[in-house]
Length: 162
Image (cartoon, rainbow, N blue to C red):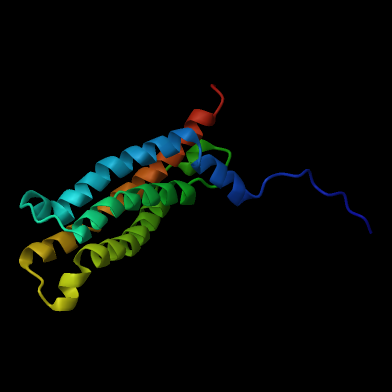
């Protein structure tokens, strides 16, 4: 029994990728990478940079750090760019907050391992380091939620005027 194949439409994930890799979202993700990456560098490496203790390790950590908010913004936009045709359905809500919390736990763990892993393993953790570790999850949470907001704004901009 032959069935008529439906019209070839891109897979939902391909459509989501195309949406996320559009110019406006990439531009805003780069802005988030520069701003939030600078904040993370100041938070995690600022004391070493300002005291003049710049080593190869500090330089590499400082160069890698902006990639984290860029990737988190893109992931947040991808996860919140569902296949709905209505922008109202994409409005960030509790589901976006929950996804952002999960992303924050995973990403902040990576950030802490990259920036404070050597101190943790050596057992030389100062109160300042504990403060840095405690503040770190706030950054990926906010960046991920910003990515969800970007997906929503992109969907609003793509709607025809009413």
